[in-house]
Amino acid sequence: MDTTSPPREPASSYLRSLRLAVQRIERGRDRNALRWQALLAFIDLSILVFFIMGPYLRSGPSYLIIDYMIAAWVGAELAARALAAPSLRAFFRKPMTWIDGVVLATLLFPDALFNFAFLRVMRIWSIGKSPLLREGLRRYGWLHFHEVVRAVLNFLVFLFLVTGFVYTTFFYAREGGEGFVDALYFTVATITTTGFGDITLPGTLGKLTSVVTMIVGISLFVRLAQTIVRPYKVHFPCPQCGLQRHDADAVHCKACGHLLKIPDEGD
Image (cartoon, rainbow, N blue to C red; front, top):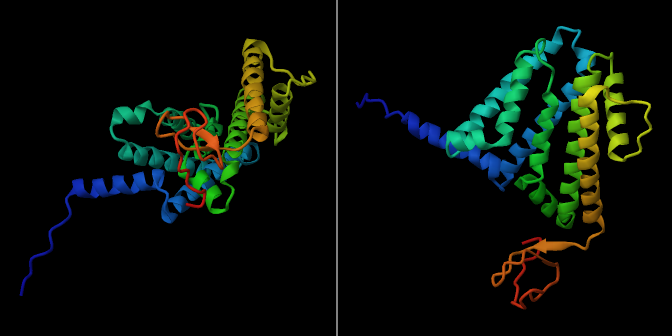
């Protein structure tokens, strides 16, 4: 009778398998990968809800419990993305690495630091560049709305970023949801250049915040309007000249006349 135990899998093989699994979740287009990406997006939205509900929860004992649970999740995400990255240098070059590092620090020390959990909205921005959005729209036959949805996401992310910054920096001490509503009201009035003037930000930092909000906000708003009124184009690089955008029913490249073979959206 053979009593020898089967050889154990080396630690390096286990780490390699784990790395491949995380990479599939991040970049995969199969059903399981898209489900994971949707779950991660839902968790990011839940973190943003916790940030908005902070004024209602921070006086109770449950606030710190949820706060540290989110901190553990963010730390685990950072570790997983570090494992999946080609190298540590590439990992630290990603802006989301530093953003999540700031979020993690504010979650670990909520009394000493402001709550910058609103920065997690940048994860929603990354959804616009992930397979989740494109594949989801393609499966429902709405791929022609891809650029419009991305422009809407970019605008909403910027709106929430500015609102979160204004709320955290200027209105965080206010009770309940009054501070967040005032921050949202100021941001919308500034982006649309309405400028009612009933809510203003004090000091030099407030003026600079208003200037940046107006400049970037108007640019994103114009971009959103352009994607809505501009005729739909498909992205397909011409083999001859490399032109990326063509009419959906184009047969020849309008730049060089090369014959195109653009696949249908359902392919």
